[in-house]
Length: 85
Image (tube, rainbow, N blue to C red; front, side, top):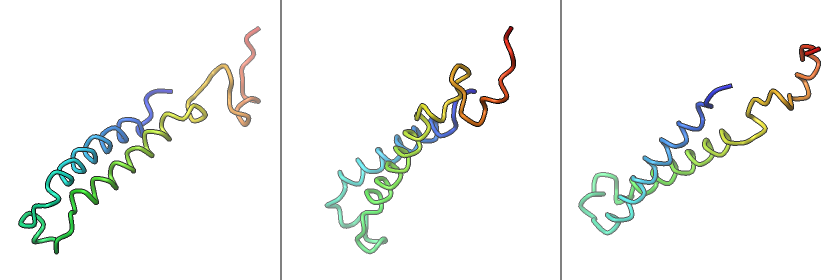
């Protein structure tokens, strides 16, 4: 049909997760930034989680077998094809 919602959702999470991960890597040695989070680099951790989630959403959205294909319908849709004669 149209654009699958998983594609733009995956791209958004890829972008934000990538930015957070890069920021977490740059500031990993700054102890004063992560003092409130008990020394845990939350930017890096959640950035990686968001990046992986976005990658999964993007890949699943781009899979060919989930796309609508009027020429080669899914097996359960073959009986509903109208005659073109």
